[in-house]
Image 1 (cartoon, rainbow, N blue to C red):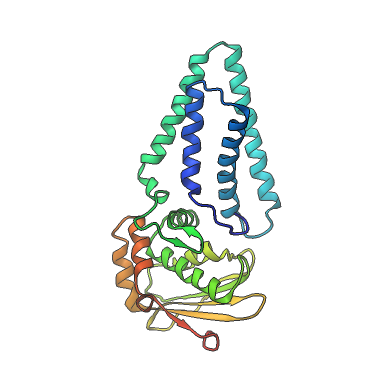
Image 2: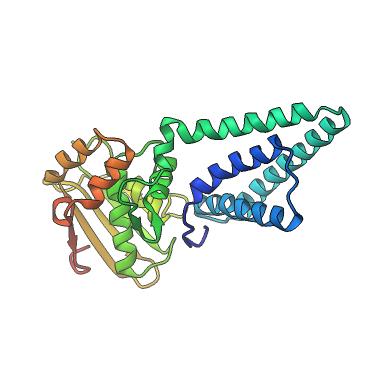
Length: 273
């Protein structure tokens, strides 16, 4: 996840881990050791991938140490609770807690937020990552998911491909029009390129974009110096605004299916400066 290697269905597998492990406790199931190890390994891989993919852009040492210690603490707490229930000879209480865990997983699946992890219509994949993961990641970065986040993700993925740059290998500058509701595009750019203020690789320019531009983007490959630019015209705003009337999956679909020329103009490297 840290290296940007995609893993399919990460969020659904994480949700499945809550329900499946809760059901095993509720049923007092005793799996063969090999099956138990394989199941825990699968769920651990999904949880670990999510930690890596959504981690900070700088040094991961402290971050990895923190979530490793937190995970160890949760495991020790679970073992302690299990041993305590065993000594109290309260197997029904343990099974009831398992059922409660299954119920919590079901609530997560059926809650309104589940559309962030359920595959949108069409099952689009961008830069090797399913659309549902982009939606969840964009919401994590921004605190919500709208069409401007989706547009930033689309532009960022295009720039990474054209500049042949790895994650954390870019510098991004964004200019916003004074009449734009927010420079939210920059959060979509950050989600896909992993630029950040802390790395000094992300800049929200203090001066505004051109009068006829909703926003302007310049992306630079830090290693090669190659640049590419994007102009988001003011004429794109009605489409983006109306897309936000739908749910998160619909906002993603509208932006990804819209013709490129209706959303942005790509500048050649010579024009990008």
